[in-house]
Structures are given as C-alpha cells and as structure tokens.
Amino acid sequence: MGDLSLPVRSKAFGYLWSASVSSAIGTSAGVLCLTWLVFTQTDSALDVAALAITQIVPLAVFGVFGGPLVDRFSRTKIMLVGNGLRAVVMASLSAYQFEHGFAWWIVFPGSFVLGVGSALFRPALNAFLPQTMKVEQLGVANGLLQSGTQTAGVLGGPIAGFVIAGLGVDFAILLNGTTYALSTAFVLVAARSHRRGHPPRADSTPGPGFAREISEGFAYLRGAKGLLSLTLVSWATTPFLYMFSSFLVVYVSQVLSNGALVLGFLFAAVAVGVVSGGILAGRYQLQHAFGTYYTFSTLCAGMAIMGLVFFRTPTADYLVVFVYGLSVGFGTTTFFTCVQRIVPNRLLGRYLSMNIAGTYVMISAGQLCGGVVISIGGIVIDFAIAGIGAAVVSLGVLVSPAVRTLRAR
Image 1 (tube, rainbow, N blue to C red):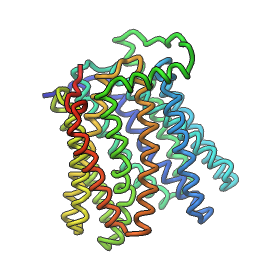
Image 2: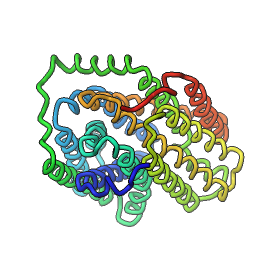
Image 3: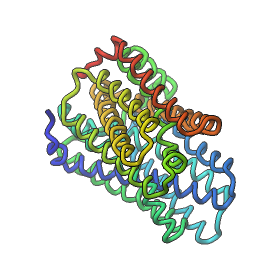
Image 4: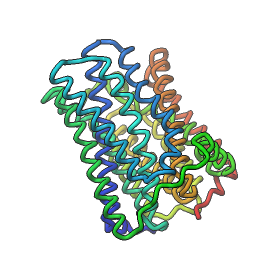
C-alpha cells in the first residue's frame, strides 16, 4: 500500500503538481473563452467547429512529431516552451481584443499555437515525473497528479464562465494567459528543486533523424504486445466516454429539465469521483495486474453511463456520475503509472506523444458521433450507445492474455 505523504514531501513534485494544475485550468478555461468569443462574434456553429479543429489538429500532428523532442531534449525545457507559447498567445490576443476587437485571423492561428503548446507540455510533464520519484512512489504520485489535473480541467470552464459573466471575455482571456505564466514559474522552480539532489538531464545527442526516431517509437509499441493492447483499449473506449461527457449539458436540459445549478453539482460529483479514484489507484500497488485493473475501470465507467439511461433523476445521477468519475480517475492513474514503469525512459516521450495524438483523434470522433446520434435519436440513445460501447470493448479486451498478464518492472 502506497504512502500518500511520500510525494508530498518532495518539493519538486509539489511544484510539478502545481504546474500541471495551473496548465489544466488554463487549457479548460481557454477553450471556453475562445469558443464564447467566436460564437458571440460570428453566431456560427461552423466557426466554432473550425476553432475546435485548429486545436485538435496540432495535438494530433505534433503529438507524434513532438515525441522525439521530448526524448531528445530536457523535458523541463520542452514544458517551458509549451507554456511560453500559450502564455504569449493569450496575452497577445487579449491586448489585441482590448485595442481593436475581434479578428478571426488572430484568433484562429492563435488557437492553433495553443494546441501546439499543449502537445508539447503534457507529454513532457508526464515523462519528467519518473525522474523526480522513486519507482515505488510512482503510483501515489500519479494518483495525486492525475486527479488534481483532471479536477482542474473540470473546474477551469466554470471558473472562466464566471469571469466572462462578471468582467467580460477580454479580461477572461488575459487571466487565462496568467495561468500559463504561473505554470511556467512552477516548472522553473520544480526543475531547480530537482537539480539540487540530481544531476541535470543533458540534451541527447541528435540521432539519425526525426523520422527514424518516430519509427523506433512505433516499432517499440508494436513489439510490446501488452502495452499495445492497453493503448488500443484506451483509444477504443475514448470515443464512447466523450459521447457521454461532452453532452452532459444536453442531458441535464432535455432529460432532467434542469439548469446550471444541477449541471454544476453533476460536474462537482464527477470531480470528487476523479480525485477519489486517482488517490485510490495510487494508494494500492497495482503493478502485478495493470492491464486488468485499467480495463475493469473502463468497464465500470461504461456501466455508470448506462445508469443515467435508467435512473434519470438528479439525486440518483449524482451517485452515478460519482462512480463514473471514480472509474475514470482510477483508470487514468493506473494507465500512466503502468506506462511510466514499463516504457524505457529514452522512449517515454515518444510513447506519451503518440498516445496523446491517438487520444485526441478519438475524442474528436466521439464528439462528432455524439452530435450525429443526438440529432437523430436523442440524448438517451447517445448515452446508451456510449455506455454499451465502452462496456463491450472492455469486456472484449479483458479476455486478452496480453492485457491480463501486463506487469510492471
């Protein structure tokens, strides 16, 4: 059983956790700020969709090509570049908004650069974590890091909404930029704190080329059958989970006939579940059966989504979405702990970047499918497909020997 106090005692981990949480708040808030800005200025759903694409494309593309950068150069430097790009974009956009007003040729390229920054920052942070922790502490550290990051992502949107309502979208964009600046400061302090007890990680000697290094990453994943199966189940269940989570607001409005207050409580229940699941996974050492535990968590998430199809009352739904959050928090922490303990350090950045690229492609697919299903059959049908799909994929993978025998070193 892991000691939750061990990572907390590490100053480097504390600063890294703060950097991750600040960045997650900024990412979530930034999506809402720019979406609100574009829709209120253009009144076009197509423009909103185009805005989403400008962030998803770099996450998918740079998610692959950014991997060699994370493995070749100092991971703290990559985090600083990612945060720096995002802070400059939001500050510049805010200044232009204050002075000149809305301009699509500023907002859309800026959104693209935000996606590039995110594609660099997150894999570098998750690859840097094992450098700050002993192997036996990774489970607990991931529990605290992933639960804090996911909760911050859930809360970032509502926080931005309150700021927009009270102070306006221009000021909200400016404040959004400060979250990335704050995250940058935490990364700098984390790197300095880490160097006091460890020799700095030197930049790697350039290899035969980016294409060769990317191919090496793919070749490693193809050869690691258990990890490949775990990655594929993660990608396969992601669209179904986002067919649910992206449209919870529609469920609250159309099925529960309620408004923002109930939606806020549901998001809060999800957040509490995510934190609880992340801490639970970190508390117990699961390295003897990573694949089984992760796949079981996605099965539970699918069953929780099905609960909303059957109960359809706010009181019961609070418990149901708590179980969903618990499953997601548990699964995410288990997944990253498994990856950090199995993948060689020299390939870790490439694997995490490939995983992010695949994940965001699947998120987009889930959101697109969810929108189509809702327009044809309604939100209840969408949730039913999401829950059944996640559960069926998970059950199918649970019988795979490669997943059941996946172990950590």
